[in-house]
Image 1 (cartoon, rainbow, N blue to C red):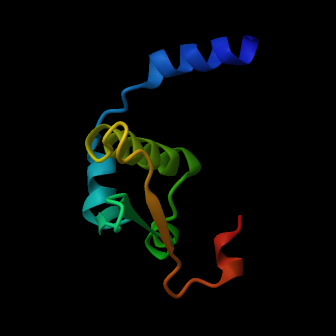
Image 2 (image 1 turned 90 degrees about the vertical axis):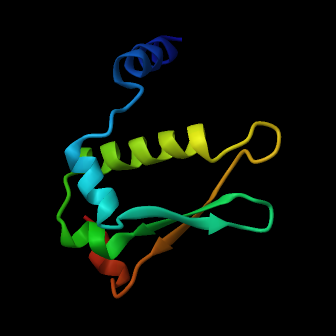
Length: 102
């Protein structure tokens, strides 16, 4: 029960996330974007790992970007009772498996 209360307090304090200049720059550079819908009209979201690694983003910066984007996706791309989830494509580009780790 304590964890639920902490989550509720965090959510009230942090959400909705605001579009900052930093997030806008990352979105403009194509770090994460929607590229259409599948046959069930679920949004297709592409996460470009190579671009994320090139920018040497901090963990908090990445969480802020992803949090904003998925909040936007939920509010604008999903339709209650019809389209309630999405498909994520993780584009590793020329990244090796071992270059993604810490």
